[in-house]
Length: 474
Image 1 (tube, one colour):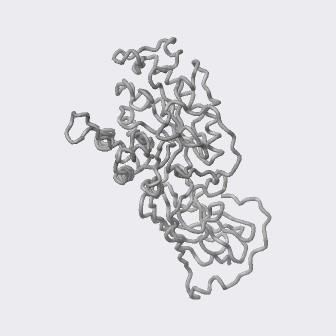
Image 2 (cartoon, rainbow, N blue to C red; image 1 turned 45 degrees about the vertical axis):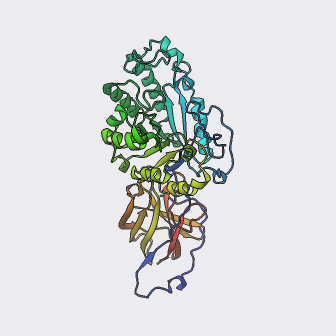
Image 3 (cartoon, rainbow, N blue to C red; image 1 turned 120 degrees about the vertical axis):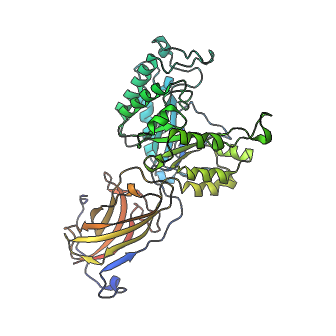
């Protein structure tokens, strides 16, 4: 990385004080930072808001609305770190979804202004945006779709007017919409992910698509979004096909469903529910049990967490299952978290996705500018999944007001849950002056030249660096 343009202060004078604890013959130093167990505003993991953004009110009671994504966006120019809802986990993610008929009310006239507004609202509030466009919910396909040759599913309820997803008109018009969407937004820095919601009510179940049609539709998404993370819908033909592409994640709706209302059909309330019947089977059938190693898993609540409490469901077991599926993202519909469960949900949230505790670093006590120096790292990922994005691991050497940066060959993207060790060499920056340098470490956004992923260690600076030690420049 290049150095920032700052006025270089005179080099610090060499002192022996910081090295007094070392024997004169020692050449290496071990640094063991203390762990931090609180919330970290790290990206790409944790709890999301729904149809709204940080700082906005929750849905009242146990309500939510799947169909009405936001269309207007209040400006925000404050510090995102000040935004906090006492009845909801802190978050760096928003999840919004809109109906196709709302976003493309006329053929080819896409409401990009709505999506642009949502992306800016998320950015201003310290979030990235997960996004879904839903083909329909009930009888609300775009009117122009029927006028341009769309066909009804011959087996559906006539009152619902569900489309035949296998008809050429659906592949044409839905495909053109997805392509236009990808052309504008693929790789957008605030677009966290895009759902492969190709068919069915809410885009969740695939509708009446055949396996062959599902493959065609998934390929439309794959060609339109080559940079943005795609997420398939568990239990669909499309998810089974997408599992062949290890970079596509998956999401499950109705997480937490432990319903027992058998209505007299089964004994002892042993009725079907998502947690015991759908997820284990669909994960196996779709072939996604190992996808978490290369792409994220998202869980959306069945109803709300408050509803779970009202039904007396076992929240400890529900949360434990979420960890076993290696969940990175949780979407509880911007509905309140019950007070008596809040601590459990917050602790669980901290384990979602990745969480990097730096246990030990070994560095030399001194080195010459331009010389090669060795390093080793022991990082404990106490989360349940890896980081799926490429961010470099960087050492910062500071003397006075001047800083120099060195990228280490130890990419955090490869740090799996539990034990991670890396060792190698780096070249000490040539611009360092004789004297002492303060050494810090960070996982950086290279464009911003600032830490993006925070270590779960005490002592982080306000701008996210983890101070490690000093080093003599000789």
